[in-house]
Amino acid sequence: MHTFGMPYLWRPGPRQRQTGGMCRSIKTLRPPVTPEVGEEDIRAAALQYVRKVSGFRAPAAHNRAAFDEAVDAVTEATRRLLDELVVRGASTHAHADAHG
Image (cartoon, rainbow, N blue to C red; front, top):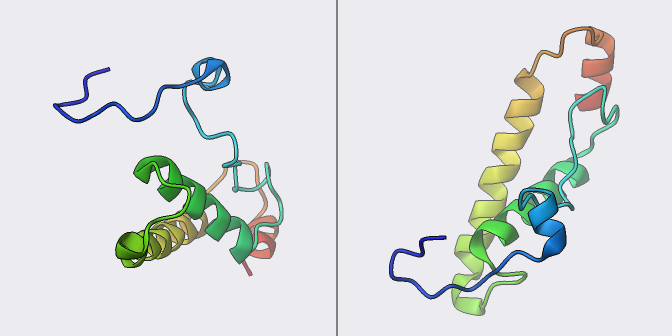
């Protein structure tokens, strides 16, 4: 892995190598895979994404605002994505129930 002159901070363990490095805590949120998705589910996925990308489980005080803004932005982007996805074979009623 090329680090572009930056220190290498993380090396995937056996489980990450098996799953292609995907964070296993982030689950599929779209119907019909997950029929009922709430705001908590969307925010939890956004938090896991930001943690993975930043490399921090919890940010230092001087990074807190940037971290929280990133979680908010990813939460909103995820909500919009789920609201706009059209899943073939899924009923409109199921989609509305999952997001309404």
